[in-house]
Image 1 (cartoon, rainbow, N blue to C red):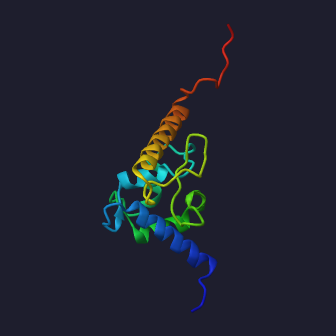
Image 2 (tube, rainbow, N blue to C red):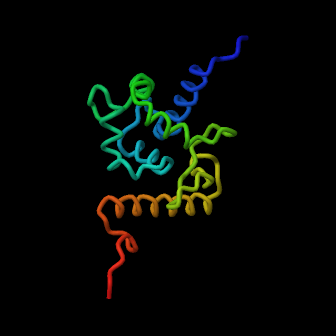
Image 3 (cartoon, rainbow, N blue to C red):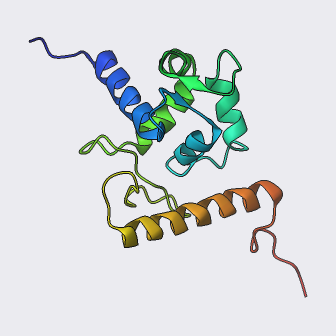
Length: 147
């Protein structure tokens, strides 16, 4: 059997990510499922799940099917790179990013213990809060005030 080329392997990886996100196994990813992806990629440069949905939901039905996923990722190399950077090359599963950008956090969908899932959820929540604070200029220490 011939080995898949680089493009075929990338598409296989992206389809594996799609299946990880499709928590209800409907064959489509909705906003809630897509939000899980934001826990795995550095996303401070985007305003959130709505930007990803606009980029990936070609038919604007508020759901992303596998065909849209593959075709839209082909059109958006930056999104593709972000997703690729969030995939553990050993397991092929998404890795969570903590508030400092550490990509070694456990993946709650990857068969971890309940304690690891809780810890990962807390890190993901901290990341989302940090992103929101960045977007709204609420982080302390950005501008030093003179006394």
